Length: 326
Image (cartoon, rainbow, N blue to C red; front, side, top):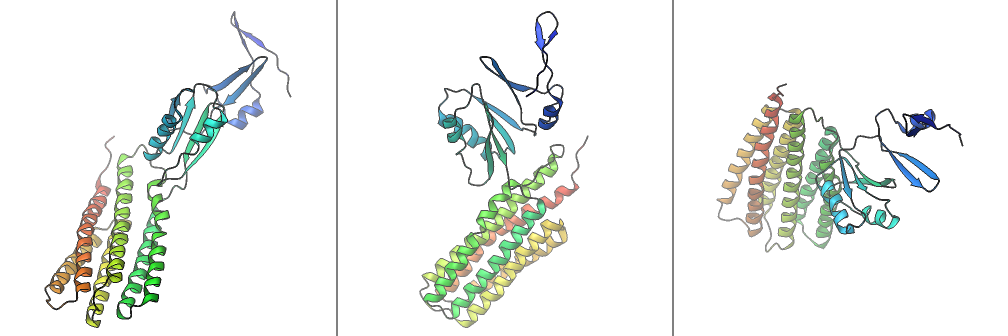
């Protein structure tokens, strides 16, 4: 405990200085605001959070709890890195528990009661550009393993094969828990809107690639499960070759984005044309099994989305030539 003298300021105001040790500890400086709570003969001073707050949303004590929670959900959905819900009165423990139960499927937030009047929401697990590149590489390697397992099962499909395929699919699905962090990309410079647009476009492209691979894998697994007839060895060899090209195409697009290389985009476009022509010739063969026709059609369908990704990647790379006029 410390005793301090009350001093007069002007004709009617009284002031007291704040202890230097406490000021340094909480990071208060001249011009900052503090909370003051009056309780009979007691006066409490509470410092604001000293981190950069992107948004403060006020609510009244008598508001419906669902309205308050919806405010938080909307800010989380928008990806606001750090915001505070502020009450005009003391927040009870019951209200705090309800508000702090809010979740977002695609983002992780650290939620806590920062003071008697506020609940803070801080975006965590922010990913750097390199982290996001690594997640995509991991997903591509996982997909490659899944496709190889799938192709192996075509020549000797049995109950054990299908169980193995299910495990492969589940392992690939686990990447979804990392994919959500695409939307938690690290701090972006507010002074560089082009950099911010590039980062968001890159996240969109990578998320699209992941979903293309996941949906293609799901489709192929279903087709194999309900396969109506055997597939020939020549057809299996064909699909091994076409999936090798397909994976090369996706790797090339990922490399083009990482290195911002238009040459790699050009090569990706050549691979795309090669695969498209190859499958067209394959489908023109009138003696294919039903399973081969459906698998080839699934690849053709996914390629339409891959073409969009290639176009988006080209735009992403061209953005490096854009500069801000100051």
